[in-house]
Image (cartoon, helix red, strand yellow):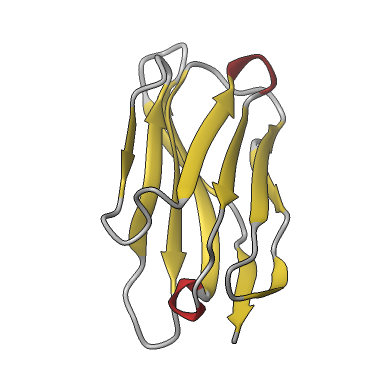
Amino acid sequence: QVQLVESGGGLVQAGGSQRLSCAASGSIFSIKTMAWYRQAPGKQRELVAGITRGGRTNYADSVKGRFTISRDNANNTVYLQMNSLKPEDTAIYYCNFVGVTSKLDIYDYWGQGTQVTVSL
């Protein structure tokens, strides 16, 4: 059974940096897209950044120029480097892997979430 294990969250001061990691445990086949989402209290979950297997990226407007997503295909790991953090970046961050099994079934795995809190 595949699990996504996140790490790197915590408390940081505004203007600081944090790096989130998410690795898949268990056997996983052909990850197409890796992404980070976040959900702040009282708000809907939103896409922060995504990256395809080929390295194409997309970002929410609110994080462009501050966050960088990257992936290690050999180790089934995705990273989110967050710089110039703002209090409004405070949220639970979730990683997401979407891909296709050997039987061509689509899978959609989520991490358990990691809290990022940015203080003034």
